Length: 229
Image 1 (cartoon, rainbow, N blue to C red):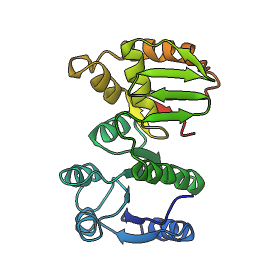
Image 2 (image 1 turned 120 degrees about the horizontal axis):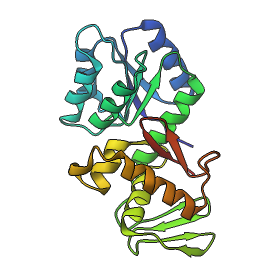
Image 3 (image 1 turned 90 degrees about the horizontal axis):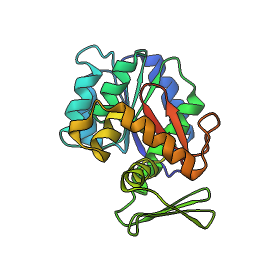
Image 4 (image 1 turned 45 degrees about the horizontal axis):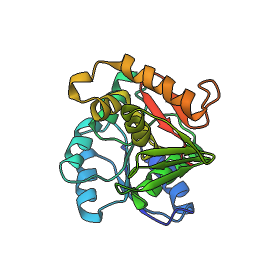
């Protein structure tokens, strides 16, 4: 059960804002609306939201700039909701600090589920040295060990680093760029083949099927999302 949260909607379409407000308030959340980028930034300063739903096509400044300004001072989770569906836009936004991306038209059920995931992740941010439990996997950051159904799985250092990155962001999209930079370093941002090979190796070791995944889900051309539980 997700606790009520302060949600800021930044979207210039009044019908979309009303639709979202009704759905979010039915979940117990407190909703603030903004019809422009500048009004959204001002609202974020005033109310300190716990999540932001952000449109890109705003009448004054683009959603990319709104995200950049938010990230100057806040790490509030941002779910982008836009008609723009290009892979390039999705990757650029996620690399710029958005936590998730959905295209219009959208399923309100899916949006609420993704928002619950963002709020849950923020409320239970995993400290270094913690132990994660996902289904029959146990991942221990302190000992860098992994158990599956109680049996130890041997992972190389890079395999563990990649698994920990994905699992500690469970339910959230990890872009290819984020994974390559954090696991291999900035010099390897173009080495997407590294990532594909290691994802394949991880799946084999933890018993995951790419065709019917239980743990690691592929967002084609963008990145990967680890099961949230």
